[in-house]
Image 1 (cartoon, rainbow, N blue to C red):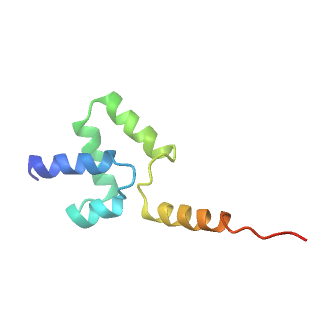
Image 2 (tube, one colour):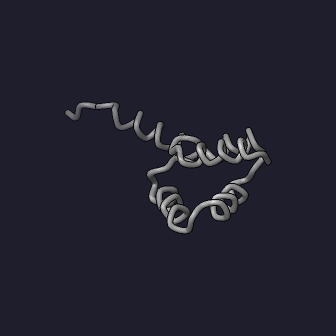
Length: 83
């Protein structure tokens, strides 16, 4: 893997809306491969910050979480008057 590809993977990982599925499609890395790469290349504190963002729900790194959030949001906007 070239340095340019590694840099792009890091950019995609820090973006909250880029799912792991997109990284797997583009670079052929699984979620565990990406986590191992981030762990090996980042400082310990930076890696912990990234994992904290990932696990707190700030990040939408999984495609299925994005779909669930969109459908939930769409359903809450429907207002039905109660009689």
